[in-house]
Length: 446
Image (cartoon, rainbow, N blue to C red; front, side, top):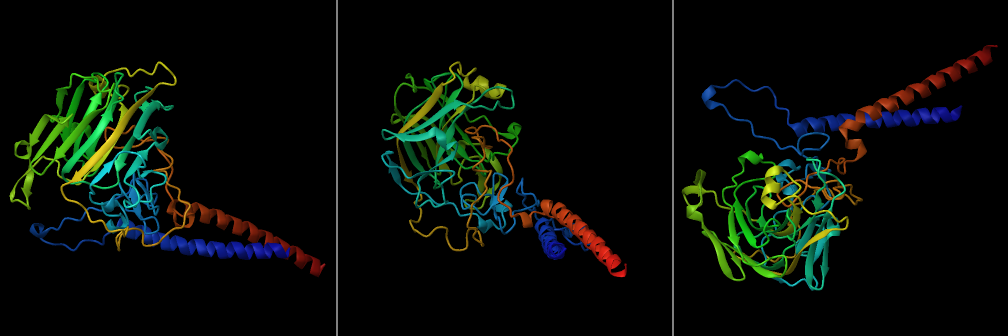
């Protein structure tokens, strides 16, 4: 019966370690949610509001991300460098500096002969190695005959309206532009009602956006728009849809390539097609915002001004909500099982108003995870979307996933049941040992 004694010792040691880890995790958990002591009574006039603490939505411990998985992306925590890159949520991460800083604009002319393009699965967060990323559904993005081609096929999962919906993709720059000129030669894929081809300058948070969109309801019309402070989690009834413009082009944009240009300056925005201005907006003519702009001392305007990425994409609006379907045209033609729609980009030319620093050090000192995990990483916010994502108009609906990389022994939801099981096992082993000793005692006295 000597093996039982060894097993008992192993289980006892393991249980003590688990209990110690549990105490440590409990302390970390309380520190994470920042449980405050009882407030000291003060006069009402001197009341100090509590600072709002962040929360990474699906982190099992609640609150902001822990140090071992410090970066919050799409509601999940991980130390995967991709999590700490574009889309990382500083206020919901371990520290704001856990997220890499925004890489600022660089002048570029890309004709897609040998583009530096990474998928969301291969992007290491370094904008000096890659100029573009496929944000999701990388299988729908190819470079062929010096053209960037983004396709959309019918998805296998019906959306929340019970309708089969096309699944496209988005290609984005890795750098952020704050004012400048972006020109792209594009052949739209909007040759069916519902199919939306998009060329957009967008910041996910706070949600500034400037866009070109061609909807399948009328591919001879360019739709232009801009949004101000509309993050992805903003209720739709609060979004200002009153800045849309519709300009006839007298040509079918799905049949041939045309030059589309957005000139975004501190005081105005111009939209051009084939070098002809089709719309302009002046900052001083936009709606007033709340508060004073400290930089100018004047009333803030509802004018996009945040650094933003340049994006190309295709998505199915015809199978979405009633309002979106009416806007894009409906139903989208999915009568052929192998039906594919495709937007093509021949080139993109970016001229920055504020060029960025071209240093090769990335990430800058002090940014990113403080502890490096060698992998492999388990990252549902990137690898297990099955093409679904949350966010703006370019994305389909999010599909629920499992938690990102969190070591077992640091997951408070698993430690308690694991400890109970180990404790039960220890009781069983101890009982067996007691029975064994009693039997030996009886043998000795018989």
